[in-house]
Length: 286
Image (cartoon, rainbow, N blue to C red; front, side, top):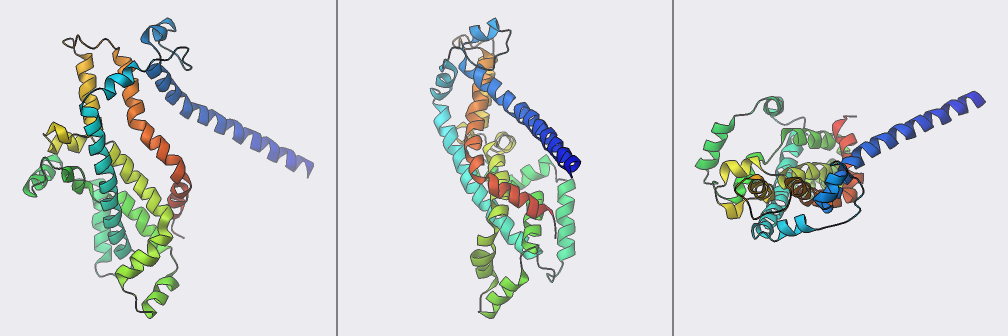
């Protein structure tokens, strides 16, 4: 018994050490990026370009970004497509996942086959562009939302979660006269917060980091999201013709990383519990 307890203690110590190493490996790059963005570049050079804890702090890079007249508008665009896009994604994904979770749905196997096929193959850039153009979405915010309204991977996670819900809940609701839409909105979705938070986080991060669809379908610079504007500023900063910007490129790059990643880092801890539970339940069919 004593040997068994010692083995368990040794195992716990090893697990704690491994988790500590993994945590440090995850936190260290973020600390480095934050430090370089806040430290005068002369100090960074003194330490050979490697600094984790800043000894002197400057906000010149952040001020340079925020003083650009395009940044506030870019934030508005990014927040809009993130909030509205995630809501549209969740609604459409829930509709399709709820329907596919019904084993008696006519043509269910064919639909699932098409969903799995779309996970492996895409229609290509040119056909997608032609469809977006034919729908009149060019130079609109919806061009960054509707083409990827439903992700196949998120759909399968939500479908699996719905399949694991007790059938008695829906049967009782139907006996009381509830229709499918009422069951979905008043019973299924309120009980599906873990998977909704998980899928919503996937969609939200995707919209927040929107870049490719913006440069493909939006030519109006006033409708460009944050990622595109920051890229333009960084390109201008690295250009030899840009003599008005005395800030080092590396400092600007690190500041851009913080400006784009900070909102996600702030939101994630509040939904971490639902995220973990949703991934476990939605990915494993009981």
